[in-house]
Length: 133
Picture 1 (cartoon, rainbow, N blue to C red):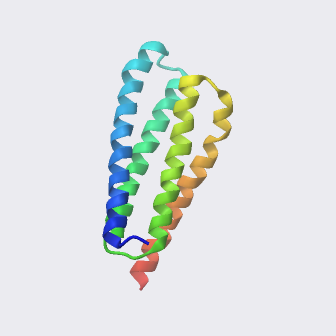
Picture 2: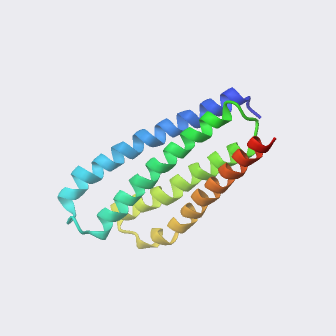
């Protein structure tokens, strides 16, 4: 298992990468996609949801990284992994759905959402355990 410092650094790097990518995807949606899709298009709304949730969870991963610097909880690492996979599945499938039109991807999105929820629950448990120790 990596030390707390390296674990913390990994989550902070992942958070920064996902945050930067969320900004880039949001800009792509606001400029390139808005030129191709109507403002009330459900596909454009899907893209905006994907980039917004990606940013929310990039910020959550930032919190995981900061908390991991002073905490040996394996739950923090599992929470970070759950959120990372959740971003990839939730936002990734929504991005792919918009770009490809493959509607079956919409059936996969809830699994990503479930991983995001699990990540939040694990984060809460890890914080609760560390505050009561």
